[in-house]
Length: 79
Image (cartoon, rainbow, N blue to C red; front, side):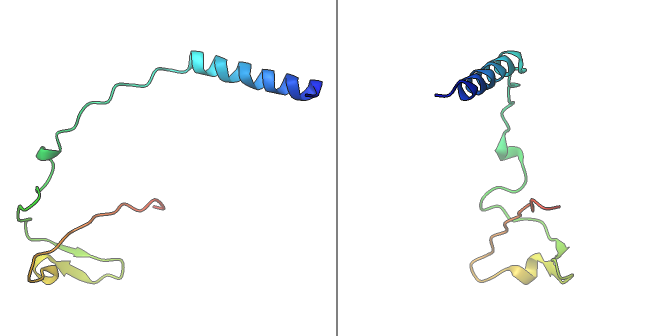
């Protein structure tokens, strides 16, 4: 290994170890009771009317099929 490469590797290692030692500890996450959030599986959702990306209004009744409907809400990553 060349001397410059060895010095660069050692310096990077020292910076990384220093950062790890000084970094704040990860905060403890609180558990979320998902059974308390929104409608549950099999439960009927309230009536709604929401526009899609083209401005067309959709209601609960308009999307229901003979076997019901599945609603999937996706948050876009490029707001």
